[in-house]
Image (cartoon, rainbow over all chains, first blue to last red):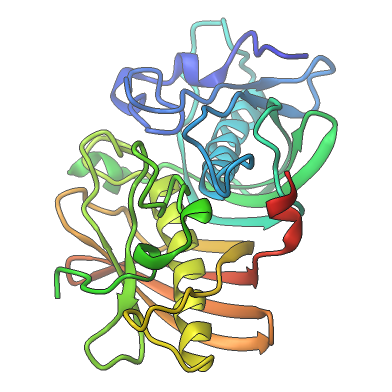
Length: 161
Length: 161
């Protein structure tokens, strides 16, 4: 699978769709898009690194992988809670928006830059407003990183600025 | 202090100076620069977020903060080991280059986007080739994130591609 069909970021409200990682309205960003896998059990984000996303030449920048795990985490939590609330992408209901409480990334091996990055996530509820997203990142068929995001329903303080 | 004078990234060898986060030769990247603080005890990286580095409008993208902690970590470890080896920036000796083994970031509060980000690091040796860098990130005077990088001396496999 090399395409995400319905992505949760496609239906974030406009005022919170500007994230550099996953905001569809941010012209400069990565435009990560996160959806369910075919079995609708795990979450998926797929990204093709650009030539400038270099660590050591030939390998992908770790900060990009961290960003991927981060936005994949908040997107996965949004997908999960949206479903728990009885909704799916396409039914016209606005999904909850999450922010990242914490992020952990383990870099397992150098990530070659000539493969798609595929993040696969597993979501667990740890509190009604807090979800753990465990993610494995593959470059092609090879597992190159894993990580965990604690995603928190966006607090009101974010909107008050 | 709003400027880094001597930065370790300024003297990385050319073939490993292309990192999207901190490579001086990567035209598209962030160009993070890491040096010692005035007392030469802690490490410092200072960055001014660009308008596109948005999370929710008005706040800084968490992936940028993760990238900052990441490159600040590898740069800090390089500074630390270079000194341990008897060298300082400017003596003409090439410093060791590190890669990231793991990265952890705790986001403590929304990070307003109209302040300089200041990462302050503390380095501990945990193995002759492995260093722990604990970092606090400030936006102006306010602590907005903290994190930890395990930085590893760059293995030969990186150069073999």
